[in-house]
Length: 389
Image (cartoon, rainbow, N blue to C red; front, side, top):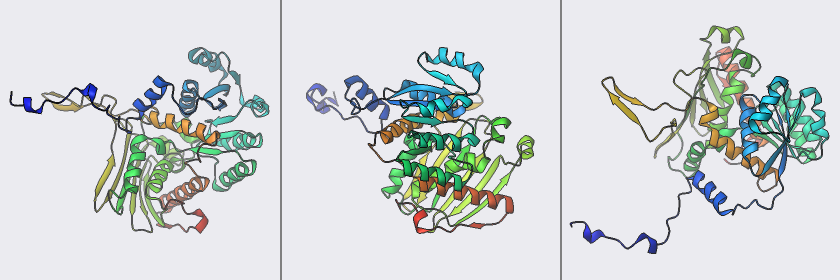
């Protein structure tokens, strides 16, 4: 009876506990359960999707599962997949087109937004046509194959008054965005070092890598974006070493392994550890360190509550997520919802045009450093610097 004195009153007569804001999945469930979402009176955003490959399939999932969007068109050149897609996703009311027929999308006044998930070299043309037709655009990075063409796309978007959203989905990942919030609250003090580890799994196909734009503009841009977004400044110097350990990647003049150091005007050092081929899963980590401590977004595990199995060979832990489609699934969903909010004018885009241009500039400097073996200096005009310093 030693603990009887601690007996409390019934929980039914106490105030209900408030669920933590971090449990975003439960909060979304409550919206669905109580039918109290603040978007009930907004019109459905009608969408055309260009490309149903690696990223396009994720955006297809987001669109068909959303109560805020309706898919009208799929534009994809692999016509042999059309019937299978229609049957699998129950797309009886969706029109399928190949790229030569895509003008129908731009001419249809019912289309509010276009999602661009086709190969990189097609992005600019689709974006310009969509914007000129007064459609909002959600585009997988990169917007275009170089900075001048990217800037041109954003100028057109500004001129026609329609959003051009570039999909840097990791900003919407709950753990990564939490690191930023805590850094901005001063939990670690002045950031001395900020590090990312980004090791791809599975190894992308050579066919994909040939048209990807290379490891710096296809892969490293995510890490550059996260680091600069978290600390709110851009580097003034970069030093990069890179190697192609895989013969097929070497043959296309690309790299599979990169180590980059970024120096920032405030004194912060950024480090990026990048690989195209992780044999143990999709290794993604973000760490910010300062005089007050460290904040770390570590690898996530699908079976995270069963941590270890013990036998004579020792402990075995659960695997980490296998690929980007699973690791960043919640980020993709939150990103899509944010885009719908942008289309409705509820919020400004979290991804600014000058941030996209800055990331491209930094990635280009990193590639130059890797290929020349030199430290590359970056100069920034006042208008290029981030607003959230």
